[in-house]
Amino acid sequence: MVLDSLGKSLRGVLQKIARGSTVDEALLAEVVRDIQRALLQSDVNVQLALELTQRVRKRATEEKPPAGASLRDFLVRIIYEEIRGILGKERTFELRPRRLLLAGLFGQGKTTTAAKLARFFQKKGVRVALVAADVHRPAAIDQLEQLSKKVGCDFYANRQEKRAEVIVQEALARLPPHVAVIVDTAGRSGIDPDLIQELARVRAVLQPEETLLVLDAAMGQTAGRSAAAFHEAVGLTGVILTKLDGSAKGGGALSAVAVSGAPIVFIGTGEHLDELERFDPTRFVSRLLGMGDIQTLLERFEELTDKAEAQKAAENLMTGRFSLRDMRTQLESLGQMGPFSKLMSMFPVLSGAKIDDQQMQDTQARLRRFRAILDSMNAGELDDPHLIKSDRIHRIARGSGQRPQEVRALLRYYDTTRKAAHGIASNRKLRRQLERQFPGGGPTA
Image 1 (cartoon, rainbow, N blue to C red):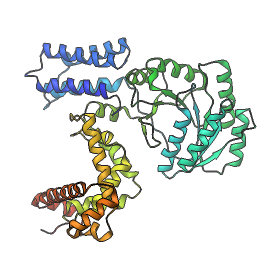
Image 2 (cartoon, rainbow, N blue to C red):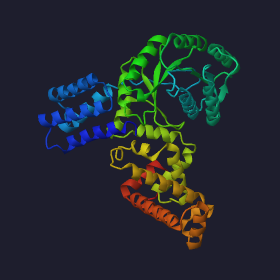
Image 3 (cartoon, one colour):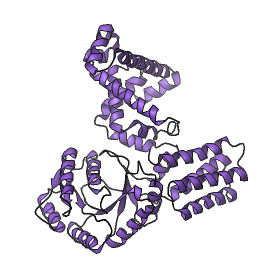
């Protein structure tokens, strides 16, 4: 997950609290020290880290837990609230036809982020157009054009025109109404008068509802200074932090930008076009501390290309009518929702589980093999697994490029899953709940 090392360190702190025989001064001192170390190792500003841990100590010694809450639970809540507090306020971001201007320094990921934003809007049914207004780097125009084809959105560029504001004016005249217009602008190696003047001219023509700064999280604490400078010069409405997934300095960038006056609205969590998330400090800290993020998981489910099929497969699983076709639907849904490791971080039960990278990769690879095997089955086999005997196993293995042992492993996995779900569904209390949830389709009493 994002900021994995920081998350592991902070979850270790919470485990230490849970294992402690009592919450006393010695435990509190150890917890404060561990939090300071975790924040500093993630490049959070020294003064900010000290102030946060001082507040944790002060609140833990002076405040009384609410009625019914233990000292342990209260201390965890204080840590959660204080870490949440350094990440700024949540900012709403409307997904509707509107004009967006992307700014930033050279090499920060603006062009790729423009395409990610386009995909984000498209998932909500909004038509999008990408406008190439980087007149200094021809490769940026070519890159944006290729990305627009990959996303499947409108694109406008004028390679002969060297005035960015003119290109934007032309685009607005040619693009249809009721389209979200995302303008990719040129960057520089540093903030200089020419860059600011060009942005100001483009901004005057575009009149954007959102002026977003794209920053590489690897900048660490210096990201805050860039955000503050751009904010003062062109009036930012938000910041998008990119490459947060692999940055050891991500904690510094997050905390520094949060106090710059420009709110963080999105974070880039990977290289793929789907790996852009709204930044919600509350959800972010929940995942960081291993408390999961069910809301984001539900939102990913809403983005599935065929939610009805996924829902039907889940219902069949819990009502004893689970087939290999349903299993294939579920595996396809998992693939659409993102890498397995990121999905795990959203479940409260699994987000703090100790699963190493190799185990995660092995699980991901096995799920890919299972999907290939299921794709090699015919309709009758998907609906009735009992048809699959030795000759069919060998045919399916050849068709999927897998070994017969892998086909048998999938069938065993299917049988185990079906039996476990049937055992749950046979529980009388849960059966009544299922009947209420799936009226007319659930098991009868």
